[in-house]
Length: 70
Image (spheres, one colour):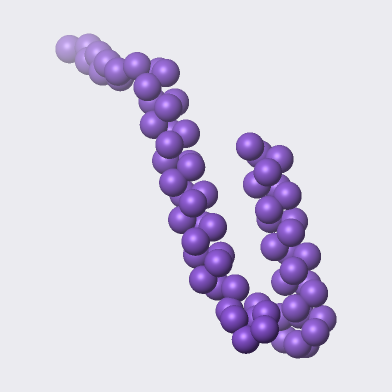
């Protein structure tokens, strides 16, 4: 999972670098379409995956019990 995220980030960086070289200002544009929409979708997917992982971790840990000394 971490390897997939690392590869995704590397791919995005390489594409940004290529766009920067082509446009000169680092704008993320490809054939008139902005990649921001794609990035937002990917970020939403990553957030959903992180939430699912957190929920799974909480389920594995079990309920939290708070003990107070008086």
